[in-house]
Length: 372
Image (cartoon, rainbow, N blue to C red; front, side, top):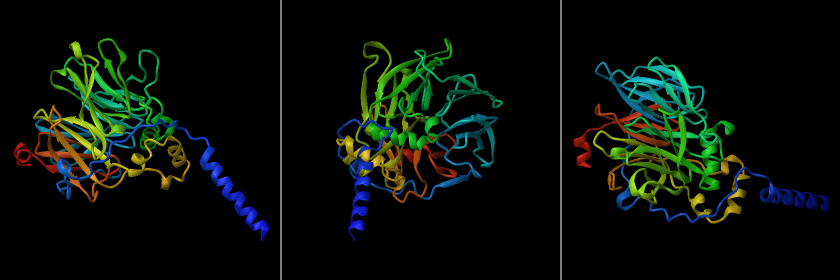
């Protein structure tokens, strides 16, 4: 019996030692998470995102972002997917073809004035795809030599400059072979290492606009390109980075203490913006915000005990000043991990996802928006 107790004791000590000192990839930084607002007040729960129409992607998963393009009078939706394919979807017939293969994980999409599709690929960098589907690398490093480890989202200014997020300079999507896994590592570390970059096609140079983000995510240009909106996933907020004039380089927060993790940003034809919340706030992450050591312990646990997105769909429509115009929810999470929404101007609001095998959409027009 003594040997049994001794053996059990050694096992317990080994487990404690493992949880206390086993190396982990993160170096957590203490911070203070704001108290989650819950789904009350301006975030009052609703079911406006339930029972969406869906377009089956036939085995392609994770339509993370979409962009619309009029071709011969028909609206086509281009969608980035988990397997590296960019799909070209006919908005009327729902038929699609594979427009291009990036060989990485395409995320943010926008069309340049030239007609080329610009892609933020988490594993490759910033790409350009010609109308015939030819993929060209624009940049995978900043002009100072630092690599772009996690290109996430982008938008294009009127002068052609491409503003895009490098979500993490610590955790490479390619190294970890998983965009979600790398993002969780960055969020658990919370070391403010994300950045806003700009690529200038005229010079071929990539420069840093702003640093200090906690997983820099969605990107959208402000009116007249005087500023850029950046979704800061780790602080549940949307920042506005000013570019010109006396306030150039300054930042302010437009949306704060969101009820979930902000992801993609898209401009709408009416001049407003759409934001996706991939998951509700995770209580364990908030409670451990000021406890770096315990966050390390969590990262030593089996994967099933680590933080993960929760099933709850939500997209938010807001104005330049941060005023909430519409917020659509699906508390049941029928369409999972909602990353964003795009008003394509064809009567549909397209809803994107980190993991779904379909592209969702909801009937939408200005009259619907005004009624909400």
